Length: 110
Image 1 (cartoon, rainbow, N blue to C red):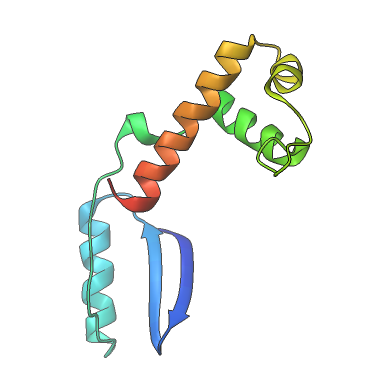
Image 2 (image 1 turned 135 degrees about the vertical axis):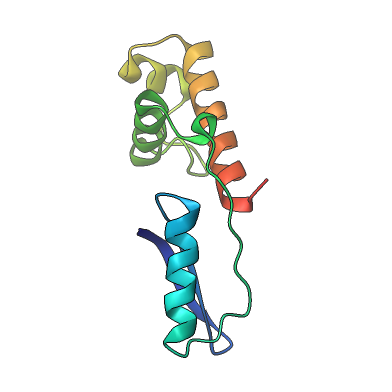
């Protein structure tokens, strides 16, 4: 099990985590309930292989973030970023767009 994020909102602890499989998640929920933790809501979903960032997509996002591609105004343009990644501009754009799409799908549970 890996905790992705946690926060307290209006006295309620909200936790997002990844478990190896459904039985691990259900076991964890059972142990929490047995410990007296009141669970208001629990959503289980399977992460699809196609929703996991490839190493190159992760590299493009991290490099873009560090170099300021996502800043306003941008500190690096797509052309310069693509050169640092060693790919064409259309490829760099596609890598970033697909990575962002995957992150949105993971984050918003779409």
